Length: 393
Image 1 (cartoon, rainbow, N blue to C red):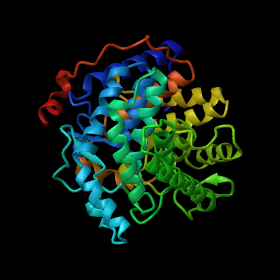
Image 2: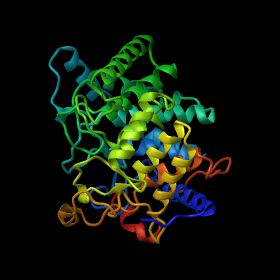
Image 3: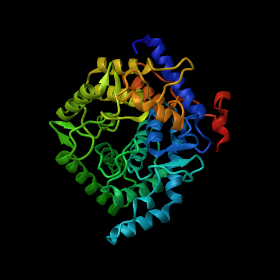
Image 4: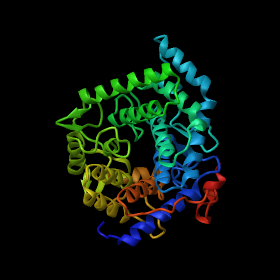
């Protein structure tokens, strides 16, 4: 994919992306992962949604982001008893099975889905707290409306963060993933720094954060770069997020430089970033959202030119309808695996709101998009070609 857009077109796509996300946001505050993709329809993820909310917050869509955090907090408050049961079992040395942990995705009205999913993932419960605190600081907002949800999320992570779980991609359940640990660190650190936790919980969160950082330093780094999971030698495109926007790793550090270089060398072709070597999901294509995360990592290290290249590649994947997909098939790792996924779930998710949000986040970061002082409060309606999504919930 070689077409490139000029500055005005790059900015226009960012503005369009904010409008699209705002239009598709559910009245509950949930962000649909994708309005038409069969496996995602009717669901919102804490992880994906938190990054979407951060992108919207960076574009001054303040109310939109706040409503997503309202949705997250409400789900946690509704599951207080479940969290307390998990805490008690952990404290007693009889931890519950993974199937009894909190879900990773929920319907727009806050319920668990009826269909099977790879559910135990702790990253989202850290990421939404990081995004909420960043949002409050960016716009001078109070955190009281999310305080109870944040405390419950911290308590849940304190009981579960050391357990292996599925990664961002709903894979490799038996490993401890560095990207997941980074999301936990970002969330716990944000909650402690925001001074919204009882003193004893804040102390425990600080201890856990320190321990998680030490684990990454000991077993999550190889040859000077971050790795996919503890003890691995491979990298994953999601690791760029630990540099930016999560800022778990200093963008100016040697670790950030080595990690960015390794992701670029191992996973990137012409600016498009694969998830990891060996990926077979829809043949293992290149993901615009990961290209934007790598761009943010470059920007954090001061390389704005490389960051812009990443933005341009992501923009080049836009469809004629103005949609950014989950992945593209220009450079597949395993073309033989495409048909099975198409038969199972149909065409690649398009649009993917997470792709649009990361595009916005990078465009704002490198000054390619200057949003209005504040976007108007979103009106949750759906255009005709998304009518089925609005009817599913």
